[in-house]
Length: 168
Image (cartoon, rainbow, N blue to C red; front, side, top):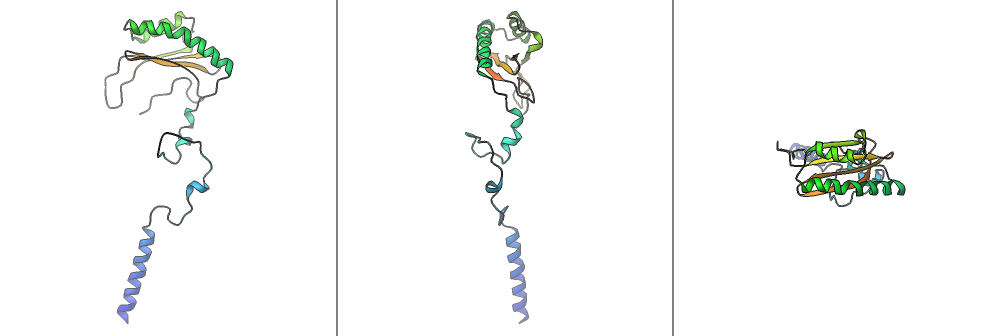
């Protein structure tokens, strides 16, 4: 009889231990059904639960139709000047800044930096990254490098302005 009680006790303890070792959230409601709705993050596959919240600081303002047109006009003036620099093989930040200032853009509205090295390397690729602020929230951003010229109209973000800070 004693062996039967010991076996029952051991079986009960092992059963409780097995319940405690169940997968995370076992017996708890599915967090997706009780969480507040999150913005859709399409094309990213499996993302962490708070991906949208954690990246909200990157959200840019919206441009009005007039701001978008002003940005496109500015981009159309910028593109040929930077294309000429690229064709000449001139990827110096000072040259990019000089060309943008020659278009009547105030130095205070410019940000020009060399390309950053990829994570894990010390060698920077050839090229520059630039941003031109216009209006209240507008930005023309891009880069000039041997393989391409990027000229893009967008809006500033409240947290950082035109150029997203480098993170790894």
